[in-house]
Structure formats: C-alpha cells, structure tokens
Length: 302
Length: 277
Image (cartoon, rainbow over all chains, first blue to last red; front, side, top):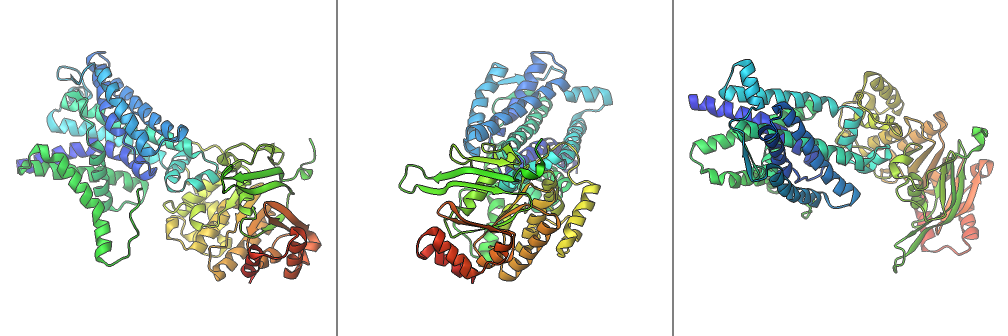
C-alpha cells in the first residue's frame, strides 16, 4: 500500500514539473509544427543558470529561477532567429543551438555540475514557510509552478497574439494573408517554449540538489512520449483540455516509468524503454489503418 | 489633399515578373503590366494557363515583389517592396484551395477573429470576445449555411464549399481596399461553385467592394462583374467596362482575343473555350 502511494506521489510531482517541459514541447512540435531540439540544451541551461546563481552568486532562488526562465527564452529565440532570419531548417536550428548550449552550460557552471545540497532553494523556502517536507513539499512547489504557467498560457493562447501563434503552425499562408508576421510568431513561440523548459530544469535541479550538464539528454523524446500519451488518452480539443492533457500525459508516463523501475527494470534501460514507447505510440495509428486495409501514401520526411 | 475618389484603389505601374531568370526555363510571367483599379470596380480577369493572371494577383498580394522598376500603389501607398503580411492591411484574398484560406485546426470563430484583425496590431485582448461573436453571427447569417450556429466547430469539419464561403466572409469582414479572388470557385463541384459565386456577387454588391476576380471560365467572366480584363502572355490585351462589358458574348471575347493577341487560336486558347463550356 505504502509503495503504491509512494509511486503515485512521486509520479504526481514529476508529472507536474516535467509537465512544464511537455507543454514547452507541445508549443513547438504541435502548435507551431516546429520540431525543436533546443530543449535538450535549454533544460540543463535552466538548471545551470539557477544553480550557479544560487550557489555561487547567493541569489534568491526565486529570482535565480526567473533568470533561468529568461535564459531559456533567449536560447529559444536564437533557434527561432536561425530559422527565420538565416533560413536554416527547424530541425537543424534546434540541433545547432543544442550543441552550442552544451559549452555554454559548462562555462556557466565552470564544470560539469554544481551541488545545491547546502544551498537555499525554492523548495527549502516553501518548506520553511509552510512547515512541510518530503514528497508533499515537492508536490506543493511543483503544483504552484504548474498552476501559474497553466493560467498564464491558458489566457495567452486565447489572446489575439496567442491565436496568431496557433494559426501559424497550421496555415502560414492564411496567417500572412490576415496580416500577421509568421516569422515573428515563430520566434515568440520558440522563446516561450524554451522558457518553460528552462524553468522545469531550474526547478528540478533545485529539488534533486544538483545541476548536471547531462541532465537534458533525451528530454525531447521523454516530452514527446508524455504529449502523445496525453493526446491519446484524453483527446483534448480546447486550450484548457490541451494544457491539462500535457500534465496528465506526463503523469501517466512517469507513473509507468516509476512502476517499471520498481518491478525490476534496470535503470540503464530507462531511455530505451521510453524510445520504444514513443515508437509504439507513433506506430499504432499507422498499424491500425494498415490492418483495416486502408491505402496509405508513401512515407514523407516531415 | 486630393479628392479620395480620384485616387485609384490600386495602381500597377509597369509591373513585370520573370521566373527562373537566366535558366532554360526563364518565363516572363508579367510583361510591363500597367493597370488602374478604380474604387467600386468589379473586375473579372480572364486568360489561359500561363497568361499571368495568378502572378498578377500574387504581386498585388505581396507574395513576391515585381521586377525592379515596377510599382504597386494601393490608395497611393507604395507597397511594392513590403512583405505579404503588410499588404494584408489593404488586401483581402480568397484562394483557389479552400484549405489555404482557412485554418482547419481552429474553430470558425477563431478563424473569423484572425480575419477581423487583418491589418491591425494584435495585442493581448481576448481574441474571441462576446461582441465579436455577435458580429460573426451577423456576418455568417446571410450565407444561409447555418455556420452562425456552429461558431465553435473546427473548420476542418466543414465542406469545401462551406470553407470557401467562410473564406469569403473572412476576406471581406473588415472591408479591404481590394478583394482578390483567385479562381476561388474552380476547386468546387459545379453546384457548389454556383452557390459560392452567387454569394460572392451578393457580398461584393452589398458592401460595394472593389474586387479583382481571376477566372478561367468565360461564362463567369461574362455574367459577373462590371469590367473585364483579358491577359495574354503577361500582358493586358483587352479591357472593357460598363455597357460594353455588359453586352459582351463569348464570340465577342474570342474575336477580341484573336485580334488583340494577333494570332490564330492555338492550344492554350482552346483551353479557354473548353473551360467556358
């Protein structure tokens, strides 16, 4: 019984905090139709910036997290600008920035990692204020962060600018015909998405007590798995549903991984299992059509 | 200030467009076209494949600029080298493909919200407000398609004809200086095409919109509009308006074509005839 509650609470925390990353991924991959790999670098960037500012600069953890958010936005904006100003493809733009960020992150931390064990963090601040600790503390902080971004994004995506962003990923020709600058919209969206991802990185680093340059490896596939699960299970339509489905999908994915690890899956197989999960999720709709005898067009590269 | 009435809605001055320059496939799609579109003109632009009609619309819409030396003035504003999204301030457009003019993933009301903000700065106001919703219903009702009761339906669930009718409303809901119709009924089945064409005619007359409609179809070109422009090999070769336009027949058009193009009817012009049938 205890282990069930434990698995659920751990997954709930991770669902909320990694949910921010999933929403970031959703913004680029789904809303904008822009396969953005930047987040493999902006996730550890968030961790590196927050950890360095707290450990070396003694900055207030809240402020440090805010700076991490803007650092992520800047990284995302660079990807968007490479794509729109220099016409480098979306995939390559993200890849280039991701590779560059690896050195940036090493430079920020002056090394491969920074410990936060003896430092003040958002979690310790909230823990002292509310007199709670352990997993429930993690959940409360993650829930507050998730709620803040949920409400901001739910509002923003339904504003005039937000609507133009959503339309840009669907029909650029129409968006230009309606007088909106699609290039600008791409940069805004990649910036917002990576701001979310960096914030998730900053929070996770503070919760686990360290930031590591390698913590971003595989986050794109992990986020994709969560988004696909959310879409398949909840079939969201409205903005509210879409945002909630991202958190829900992340929670289910985390629960799956937690349970798999508890029943004896070796931790080194984690990413392989995730990769297989994504392949499965992407292949199911195709296989279903194939089995139904439907005609399918030749493979495309997009 | 000169009287607004005397400024043409749109002026094309010596506009040329060359594609695939300096290759074996070099084509002069537009060859020094000068055309004034006056306020209230309802022009049918006709021509065979490759005559330059679509290039003409694309240059006006700002999809690409004309060759150096050409000019596009909309209400005396030089828009020649402005990007497409800045032309949109003046130009409303309905494309041939219903999936281009509308956003499938967004709802009807979200699509219309994109449209009411054409040429305006987008801000952080709610995109679909109550007052906008009311005006959307009023705008959709005259279509007689029941779309006003389906404002929250994704546009992807509409038929091609419905999407094209919605496209038309989106292009005209904030009155454009010029409405561009790019063979906008050509991709529809004949019955739907007829309905959308009648709706177009109704909206253009009701709101007194200045329109430039490109068509392949001679019957449409004769039946609708107050002015007819014929394109051939990148040039305007025939331009009639008023009573002369109203009295035109298909044989007249063929004769004009032979005379102005200065050649016997060849393959591409027979295309024109068959499309009229």
